[in-house]
Length: 385
Image (cartoon, rainbow, N blue to C red; front, side):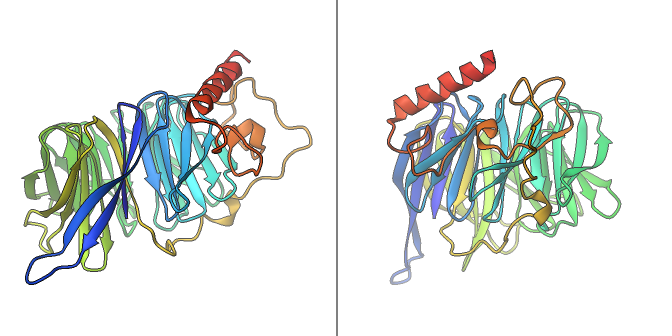
């Protein structure tokens, strides 16, 4: 089990969590031990995601970096986006979906690291996206004041809903029967069968991160030290507790045998792990904490599991056949005249650097500084073109 967190200081932190069994009446002890720190990006980190092998990070430097945590190596970098990478989501072991300020949503093959699909999703920035548990649908929100539903089977837009303000978070419930949309300090709860709002939760301050603890209980963190648990049906606050000394930037939960765990990260530099009680009206108990000394921006957990449970997205997201005369796009992405959907499985176009046996920008033979300079020069060259 590894805690990973990105920071304003451009550093990615990794902490391996050691669990010591309970002895003579004492409870089990959890200890986070520093595993790595990596200065991967040339700007602050904005997103992190993990599956059962890889951790990926997105940044304001417009790149996505890939790390193989089983082999403990940097695996490569994806240079397709031309704006801050705002969200990264794995679906199972085979697919990664990314969104960015260039308005694009990209579907990646997480084995070959090819760009399978590049969709012009929003007229403004893509601020957040969420994949339905079935893998057949996705939701995205952006600065064009729209909530968009995507048919991942056919790789196209299925529904567009205009909302009054710019939402910055959207999330499916574990069952996929409801979803929530966050605008500032309010959470609208939608039912899938009616696609309408069934209720609104109001938090104290602007919300920065949410995670479902169950299909009806939502944990909410924001620009304050407190974390709150809300019932999505009654809309009541079940409990609240002080988690940090500064605003909470990331929150997520997962289950392992014997424990339902909540993880929080804050601007105060701390990552904390909590064990949740069966009754969510009771605040959780602190398992362990670690001080990174940095201003944390995003959070992920890598679980060393043999299988992920979920296989892949539907087969329609496999690469389209490469045309003999591919369409030429002046800019790699974000061009005003770009079509609604472009498919670019070509490695050079998608800006992939990765799994080749020959040394490439993303592989270990280059030093970190040289690799960083190569990425920056490459991006500058592409922008001039």
